[in-house]
Image (cartoon, rainbow, N blue to C red):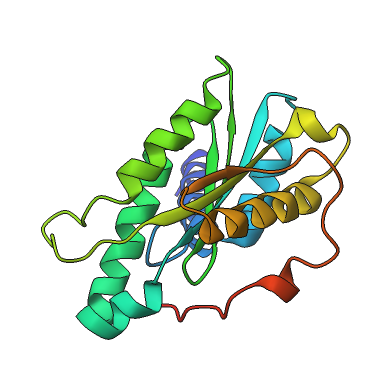
Length: 201
């Protein structure tokens, strides 16, 4: 075999290996049930988006998820999580990012270029409350808490997520499914006021 042919085979082999490796890495960063980014992968993308002051951070939590599992089974719970993930990803679009933080909790960051964030999130809450496609008996509401990065200049992702988390639990306690984070400082302990966590599917 000529030197050129050997070199060509080596280049092709390396390209195939690099593509395989890239696929493996991408798969490892994706949640197997929903296809969303895992926490670490979401965090990297979210931090890049937060360089834009128009960024909005959203935390979403499925209401009464344990009840769905107990009533309809874990397969129904999985279908509900997958449907929630698809609807969140569609609402955020290609310019944003969505991740599954664990269980029935999701996070998203998008750029509110046209200042319609509140309206978009109100619409999203209604979409998330629709029954799962093909399973009309499987549905519940999803509580959303959100914060605009510009309201807390210089605050990084962990702090903004805590603010969105606080707003989300305020939404759970109210008649509204969507709540914006307060402008002032965070309350001392969000975790201490949380209801018990619901089981994952």
